[in-house]
Length: 118
Image (tube, rainbow, N blue to C red):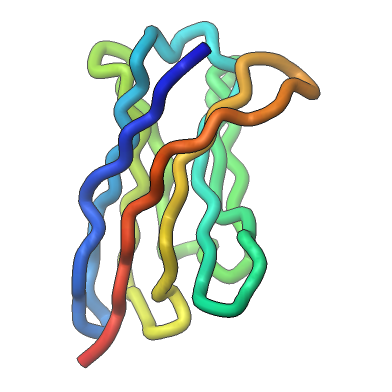
């Protein structure tokens, strides 16, 4: 099992940046994949980005490619989501997730609100 705690959300103006953090309750070295989803009001939860520790493969949704960067710090057991050039369409609750193995059910954090508005 793993517990995930997100932080770093807030209110930012269009064009601004935020960095989200996801602290895991255990070493992330042996976690198969970690990443981020988001859910805007009235919409389904959607994939944002992920990182697989074996090889460090990162994957991004088309809507955030070139603007968002997912990374991890093994020493801190933390995954980050650096978000640049934010626009109002990025407004959502952002959820961290982790899968301990291939095909296993994900663990979720509690979510952190990101609001992009002038």
